[in-house]
Length: 419
Image (cartoon, rainbow, N blue to C red):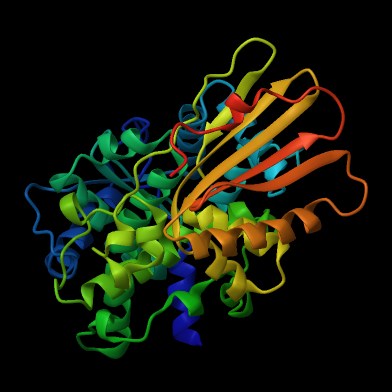
């Protein structure tokens, strides 16, 4: 348990490898910066070996105050949710029943990240930062984690990689899980080596995901009040890149391909690939062709927001309303693409969610699960009219409408290809 506590505490010093705001301004060089560089130089050969990424150039490092970090986070969140995007994401997830419609997302995310972050790598300035004042016993682990991100950035442009998926939920989550899982795996393996006094091959050990989920972390005594009180979807999305990403790397590196960094052709682009690493390369895990709605919203009906949930958020949705976690996860498996849109019109909000499944039987299993979800989501008289429909053998459409008033044209609720 002591090992779990130490590693879990470091796991939750969540890095901001995907941040892209220029963090180069701040405190000048100091003795502390020099000490940090010296320690990084000592750690670098082992980090190169464990990560499979030999350094191509010198690493840049620095120390930043908590105030610098807060300003950095604020700028990053503003960039990530520019304009009305943050509010529209909340509206969509509130209609799914995953968050309250009164949620103020930006300050919540800021509090959550400030509660966790002890270091971050900024790909725009190619600099690794450690937050001033963190416990000395955590510094080395944070350094190892962030040094992996610095090395990743020497092989792929992390800033461009993140920017390319920033506006799309599922690919963005998958890329972040690969990047963070890689760094977390190396950090975890290095820490276990330090604890045992020898070399540890984490890929040969039992899978770790079940012992590092949010419930296990709480029972291990990890006090993260903001994280524990956050809606489940936000809590799980924050943990997913580290926990499931770690699991992804552990399973992939135990396979025939060996310790191949998850970059380039080895980069996953769906959360389905992250969640089922043992089936990497199987036909059903090939990234699906994207789904698109047949008609753009116009006239009396405007589109508030559109995206896809992917397998991970579909799983979280089913877990939210179904009592059997294993059945929820099984019903989310077989995902082969999805798209939703939230519309605003004369009668109010309308949500349509279309998903495609690998087989007819998996589509049927998901449709039945969604019928139970909607019954739990809207018990009794709710003022909503909901339906689970089957426009194709492998297609499931969920429609959530106000019970009274005008409905949008069916063309706004349909995708281009039904299979």
